[in-house]
Length: 404
Ligand code: SF4
Image 1 (tube, protein in one colour):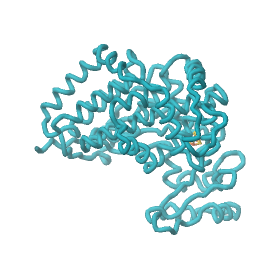
Image 2: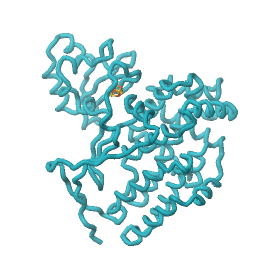
Image 3: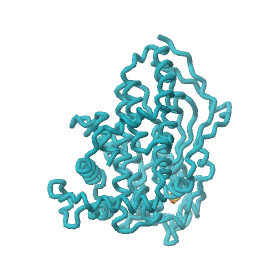
Image 4: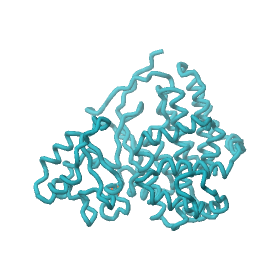
C-alpha cells in the first residue's frame, strides 16, 4: 500500500539544546581525553594546510597519523592519545592547540560538532546532544521538571521528503511522541514506565504493518493504557531477580569496558566484590548485600527523585531515534537496547557510590558509560544481540534488567 510522502520541514530539538555550552577547561572529562578521533581525508588535508607554527606541526607529526589499514578505508587519519590518554593537541591548560592557532573551522567535523548530532527522522530534522559530554549531563541534572521539546520551521534549503515504507513508519511522529510521554509519566516509577513501553512496543510489533487503520486504533488505545494505573500495577507483578540483575550488570560491564576504561571498570566492580579477579564473571562472589546500601546512597544523592535518569533515558531515546520502525524485528531490538542501556547506567551509577557519593563522581561515570557504549555502535549492538542469543530478549527478562 502506498503511504503519503511526509514533508520534513520542521527542526525539532530538546529545549535544553540551545542552552548547551562547552565547559572547556572546566570539564573534568574533556572529550579530548580517552578517545581516538578518526576523520576523513578532507579534514586531514585542511589541518595539514592550516598549521603554521613549528610547535603545532610537531604535535601533528606525532599525534595525527594516517590510517592505512583496510578496515579504516572510510577514515583517513586519526588523533592519537599520549600515554596519559590525552589528545596530543591538548595543551596543559586543557585547551586545543589546533583550535587556538587555526580557529574552530579547521577542526575535524567530529570535534566541531560533538556532542551535537543532526539527522533526519521520518518526522523532522532533529538536533540532539550526546550524554557522553559532561556539559550535557550537567544540563540534565538541572531539569527537575523534565525535558521539553521545541519545534521551529526548517530553512527551505534543508526541507526534505520522506517516503514511508510501512504503516508504522507513516506514524512515526505520534508513536515516538507517545513513547516519550510514557518515559515521562511520573505517576509510575521509571522501571515501570520502561515495562509499559515494552508492553506497548510488543503490541505494536504484533500489528499488521500494512494496516494504517489498525495502527491508528492501537495508538488511540495506547493513550488510554498509559493512563490506566491497573496496567502498570500488573506489570509490576513481573518477577524481579536481584542476583540476575547484578550478574547481568557485571557481565555488561566486563564486556563493554575494555582496556581503554579498565581503571573505572575495576573501581565499579569493587563495589560488589572487593576481592574479585577482574576478568571473569565466574570468579565473582556477587555480594547482594553490598548493593542495597549503595543504591540507597544513590537515591539520597538524587534527592529521591528519578528526574536525572528519566532525562537521561529521554535524551537517549531521542538521540538514538527510538523507536526503530523499519520492521517489527528492528522495533523490538531498539526497545531491548534501550532497556539494556538503562540497566547498565543504573548499575554503574549505584556502583559509582562505593568510591564517592557526589554529583561530580556520578556525572563522570554517566559520561564514561555513554562514551563506552553509545559511541561504539558495534559494541552496543553486540551487547544487545547477546540477549537475543541467550533467549533473554523477552519482556519478562526486561523486567529483570530494569527492575533491580
Ligand atoms: S565533554 Fe563536552 S563539556 Fe567537556 S570538553 Fe567536550 S564538549 Fe566540552
